[in-house]
Length: 157
Image (cartoon, rainbow, N blue to C red; front, side):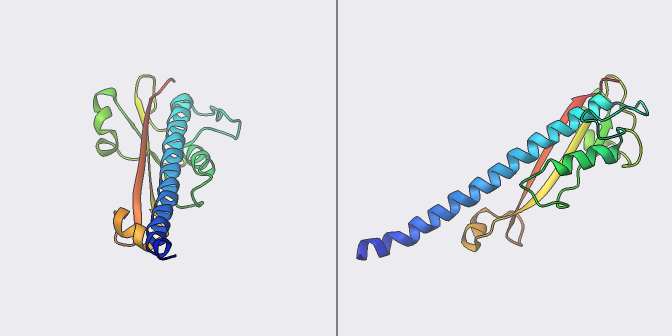
């Protein structure tokens, strides 16, 4: 009993840490995969007006792609991620998000012409749920960890 009472708090802390890390890693992987899907869809759509979304949900616009991205984030609460879509030249690909302005959500994918690069950036403040774990893993003072995802694809149209 004495040994168990000494080891139990450490085992419980370790268990909580593993669970929270699993949630953070799962959400990071999902954020990354959906960013890749969004960049790929934006690259396929191009800037041609009237192009349909690959899933058949309507015209291909920045808003439609943002909606597609946010609806496919199943383990992250709705409305907590706002994807940003950028289009830049291949020479500016390494600094795409800082060298251009974000596409308007109502237009077709702005300036996405064959050979240009489209980038989708997303960020989420992941709650860490357990105060002791958050004191070790947090990147924000409110007990959350800031996770980001970014993906690029080459425009096809």
